[in-house]
Amino acid sequence: MDIRAPMPDPSPREGVTEAPTSAAWRVDKRFTVAKWAGAAIFALAAAIGFRDPGQLIVVGIAAVLLIVLGVRDLLAPVRLAAGPEGVTVATGFRGRRTIPWNQVEHIKVDARRGMLLRSQVLELDTGDQLYFFSVNELGAPCEEVVDTLVRIRSRSGP
Picture 1 (tube, rainbow, N blue to C red):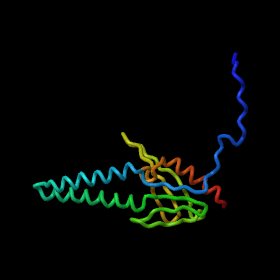
Picture 2 (tube, helix red, strand yellow; picture 1 turned 60 degrees about the vertical axis):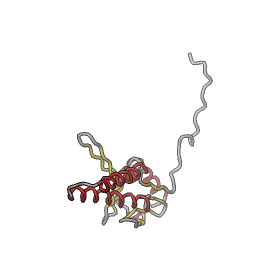
Picture 3 (spheres, rainbow, N blue to C red; picture 1 turned 180 degrees about the horizontal axis):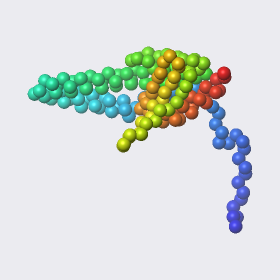
Picture 4 (cartoon, rainbow, N blue to C red; picture 1 turned 120 degrees about the vertical axis):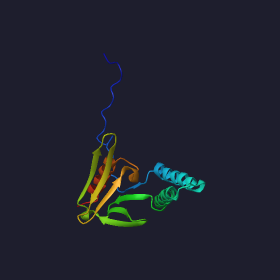
């Protein structure tokens, strides 16, 4: 026999959240830090020196590549944003493109499972262009991002 006081029935609004009107997803800071740490390690290895010029070139290229990727993360951290007018995607090194909702044909998650790894990529299809975003670029699971995008889009009208 339960002697606790009965809990009132939840109102219809409890637990129901309004669809957001806008959202933005940015690069996971842990990966930005990892890129800079990797660049520092490779630069230090290049500075310490290798006797083989081939090794020095490979280590130097790795350091420069990680620096470039780290700079992009700092200059354009937001990779995807959405609002009532549409979605804004990062393009190139620092560019942005706003795509109206009526030009977005499909938003889906492409999930792949390998022997040890599982990868997810958010795919945004405008008909003439495909945009791909990884979990690392979005800083959130792709399914959550798609759910939020669909809710924002549904709230923005036809």
